[in-house]
Length: 182
Image: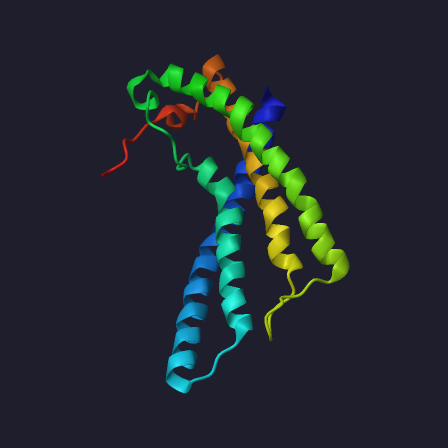
């Protein structure tokens, strides 16, 4: 189990690094958006490229930040049973959900989006908009983001199994549940 926990720590660090990148992309998207608005409405000038930069940044925030959200245990859950069961039962629910839902879905999506990116790369696909950007960078974040969530899902599975076995001393936070504020 020690090598698996080492993998888990490494993957957590990778997800945290991509999470920091996503954080900066939020700031960049805000700056680009504000700058674009000032130039468009203040100087009556515009560029499709700047609009597309915003879209690309937003795609990066979502796809590159998803694995970090999973690592932080801050993803969306359906609270039908989860909040009312014991911590150990929550760990079992997580194990079941990771194995039967998260991993297959994310692996399938990573596999299915790779040709989407590859086709754009090979063809040198560009935006159909005047002054638009090349498309492969934004299409690359799809398989990359799904791959990161798949790997982070494996990390979360390792941590939960270790917690169930009682060999993960820092795993107490895994079964924490905070009811969403309404």
